[in-house]
Length: 209
Image 1 (cartoon, helix red, strand yellow):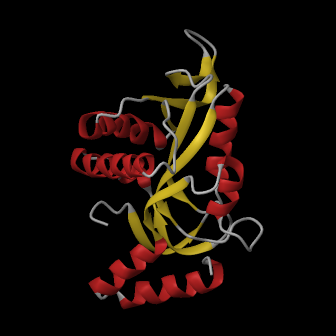
Image 2 (cartoon, helix red, strand yellow; image 1 turned 135 degrees about the vertical axis):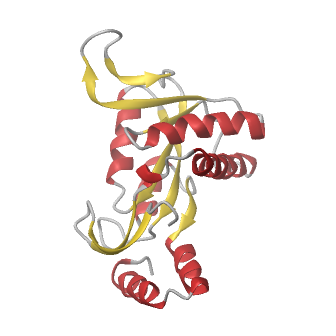
């Protein structure tokens, strides 16, 4: 909230739902905040590896554009803080028609196990596209780590977006640093009753039961 990456109000999401809060990861763009975020990503990944929820992998993939700094800084934090060495890659919105060409940048994902980093998950549309991109370039997605899980029902209106994605990449392989319920606990501690009320109403309508 200090950099307005988290805002409260009325926001129409990509899913078409009208949300009382909006998370704009593009504003997580200062040195201190990126250091905190990359540490959180790296710790979440390290814990997942330690518990064997995610197999040893080769590449962190950050979907363009917001995922690019997350993948690069998380790869750095994984090495400096946990002695885990992986490459990172990202895609372009449009394929480059000169120079090295192509749509992918960074280490090759071909024949590699890949973990995707995401900012926030609602319908999971962006992550599905990223999974498809990695597959098209010969990689295998073995995990997804998101900064914030909105914990909403998915496209079928019954199961969660996380469950739908785990049907694609394997059970127990989608992780998050924070969840919607964590935000609600934080709002309660801060005495932000109006915002908490709006969140609760949204949760009652779209939240995972």
